[in-house]
Image 1 (tube, rainbow, N blue to C red):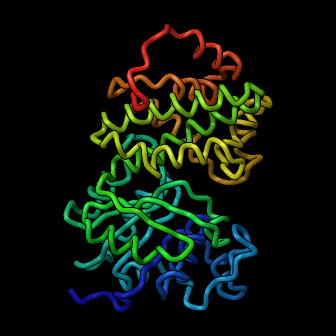
Image 2 (image 1 turned 135 degrees about the vertical axis):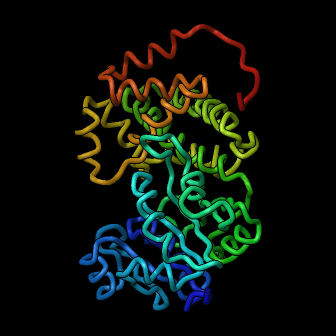
Length: 341
C-alpha cells in the first residue's frame, strides 16, 4: 500500500478543548498538523477565524494548523492519528477510520475512560478494531487544555506498545514549555486517566461540604490506593501510578476548579442532582460515565474501591453526599500496608 500523502504530519481527530489544544501544541512544536471535528459548521468558523471560538476563543491557530472536514481523507493522508474524542465516542471513531488506514499508519488517543457497557480500556478496543500489530499509543497526564494552549509549562506521559512510536510522539509534541515522558504501560496510564475523574468528583464533594484539607488529602491518598489496586488487577505496573498519569493527574484533577469533574462534586455537595450538575457545567464530564464503568470492573475483578463506590451511590442511587462520607468513615479499621495499596 502506498504511504499516506502527508506522511510527515499528524492529524488530530476531535476538535473539543483538549483536541484543539493538542493540535495547537503539535503545530507549534513540530510542524504541519491537521485538525478534524464532527461539526462541519464549527470547523468552517475555525478555518475562517483561525481559532476555536467555542472552546479556546483566545488562542490563535498557528499558520501550519490545517482544518479538515473529511474523516476518511484525514485517516488516509496522515501516517499518525491522535484521537481526542470522549470515551463514549472512541469505538465509533476507531471503526470509522479503520478501513482507511495504511499499512504504516499509527494511532494514538488522548481519550480517558473505560468503555461504558463493556468496561474495556481504550487499547483493548483499538486492538480489536485495528489489529494487535498496529502501533498504538495513549497520551495522558496532569494537563488542562487552556494552560497547554497558553504555553504554560506542562508534562505528560506517552505510553505505546511500540517504543519507537512513543519516542516519536514525545519528540513531536515537546518543546520549551511542553515535556513528554514515555512508557510501555498502556493499561496503567489508561486506568489512571479513568479513575482520577471519579476521585475528583469525590474531592469536589468533600470540599463542597467544607470538610477541609485533611479530608481532601485523605481522599487523594486513599484514592490513589484504589486506582493502583484496580490497575494492577488489570495488568498494569504499580509504579506507573506514582507518575504523571497516576498521582500527577489525580492531584491536579482533585484540587483545581478547572476540572469539570471536581466541579461536578462541588455541585452535588450543593444539592444538585447528577443531571443538574452536568447540565450546569455544559461540557462532557468523564467522571460521571467512569463511575459506573469503574464500579462494574471493580466488581468483576473483586477489587475493593470504597471511595469510587460511594461516588457511584451519590450519582446513580440517590445517596446523600453526607451519608456517603459517613459510610466511608464508619468502615472497619485496617492496616495501611503501603502508600500504593
